[in-house]
Image (cartoon, rainbow, N blue to C red; front, side, top):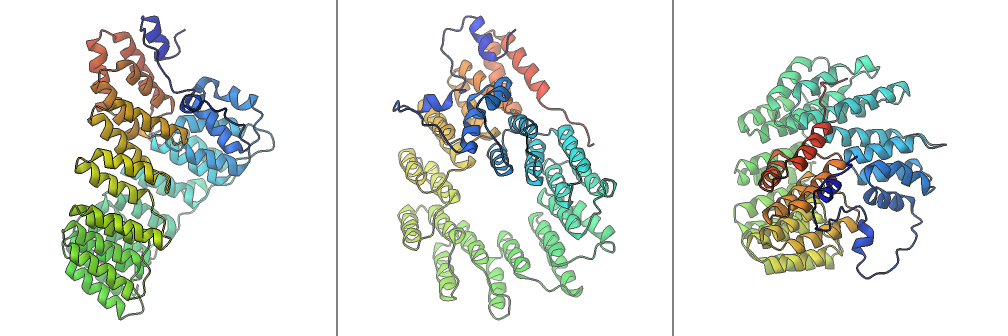
Amino acid sequence: MIKSVVDMLKINGCQKKLSLGWNVLARMCSSGETIKEIADPTKKICELMISCRKLGLDTSLSENGIRVSQAVVENVLKRFENAGMLAYQFFEWAGKQRNYEHSVRAYHTMIESLAKIRQYQIMWDLVNTMRSMKILNVETFCIIMRKYARSQKVEEAVYTFNIMEKYDVPPNLAAFNSLLSALCKSKNVVKAQEIFDGMKDRFIPDSKTYSILLEGWGKSPNLPKAREIFRDMVDMGCNPDIVTYGIMVDILCKAGRVDEAVGIVKEMDSSVCKPTSFVYSVLVHTYGIENRIEDAVDMFLDMERNGIEADVAVYNALIGAFCKVNKLKNAYRVLNEMDCKGIRPNSRTCNILLNSLISCGDTDEAYRVFRRMIKVCGPDADTYTMMIKMFCENDELEMALKVWKYMRLKQFVPGMHTFSVLINGLCKKGNVSKACVLLEEMMEKGIRPSSVTFGKLKQLLIKEGREDVLEFLREKMNLLVKEPLCD
């Protein structure tokens, strides 16, 4: 029986030695040093999950005598949140271990992972299991509402809210706010407003409720409606808090009314509600977008004069402002100042610099920055995707694969976008074998490839007369996702 695309390619006489990536750690240790036994069960499990084929994972986990705890399972599930079905296989295995019971947090993390890859039937099966264990809570349904809304399944999100009572979890103001927030963040503010108008007598709105709607109309963007919500909030006796003011400042800045936003900040200075570093970061960022670098620097200095300590978000905004006007030396000076003040840069800091350098075509410096920054802060999915894409577009596929190997060594599980840029790069170079291997690995982890990525590989396979491999991959993809409505 043919079990993988590699078997298929070998059977059809492909002479190229293919690397599936299942023995990742061994391949990455180019120094040849022996890997020491890892006492940390989380690390050991992650190694096994990366190196083992899906069908052999249960056996490998059991044979290694690993004992799991709730903390270990939670950590592993978090690391593999982008690999939904692989995470679910581990989740199922862990649930069968002696003297172990899944925590609510583990269930919630698993529900999020499954919803991300639209495995809704399995997700609702877990909800029903939680109900039988009497561990369902409001947050369970809030997670599901957020995930449905993010996938533009608006009716399903509302349905989830409406059936909470059926699951013996009465909806409260927190659930109501969560539904509105999920809809607003997914650009369905009109629906959110409609639900608010119909239920505001059932759930008495608080400042958070109004802030959610305010932000939703701001992102719409609909400044007049946002102002109306702000007035309604005050008229109903809800005093705007620092979050509300921060949202209003952000809305005005995005509407190009930064000077009006500055006026609000000055009003805040004279009231009991003092502006925070977040508010200043929005202003500095906006000045940067508008190429008003002097104003951005002045705002940063005003913040310091007002006794508000700069955090990484404000520094990132200032670095971004300098990058926008191609003043990279100044951006590096800000980075040095952060180091002197003991403020650790984050992945966002790295990404701002990398994006600027790549846009300028300075790929060598981008790679140098990447190598320096990974020693200070952990790269995120955007970091890896940017670097891999940069090398693929410059026809430096070996360097792209080098970054990919480093990412795997760090046990970072790539998401759909990271997989896609490398598969697209392989397709561009005509390396159909490795592209097929990566696509299969992607699906093994429960990640559905985009139609664009699959389409590029499809064209190559047809061109090479490999309709058999194409059919194999197509069948595997069709089995990956099923989308029942709800429970």
